[in-house]
Image 1 (cartoon, rainbow, N blue to C red):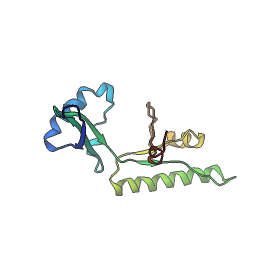
Image 2: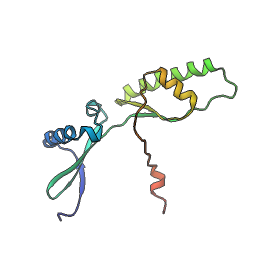
Image 3: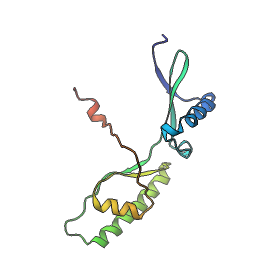
Image 4: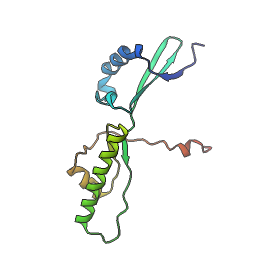
Length: 138
């Protein structure tokens, strides 16, 4: 049975070990201390017969996906609309208990908008797993 790895929610008694492992690896894992305090964050623990093996905090941020702009729309109106949509997303994040909002886009308008707002450009790669793709035969 020692070869099997299982996953469970982290328990209160895991707290000190989770904190120790997180901060001992902060140079590699890029841990953000605020994430654990977000109301929607939960922590999973992978374990084997020897106890905890890996802890993973999982947060539920809002992701602003893409935009569809009316052809020929005035740039100032588009900028105003983006700002209003961002404010609405902030309100939704508060209501849902999300601690972060992501805007993923390589579109020039979005890059300019994000740079003028509260967004920071992250120096990380972003990976996506679509659940519908997980069910496809490869």
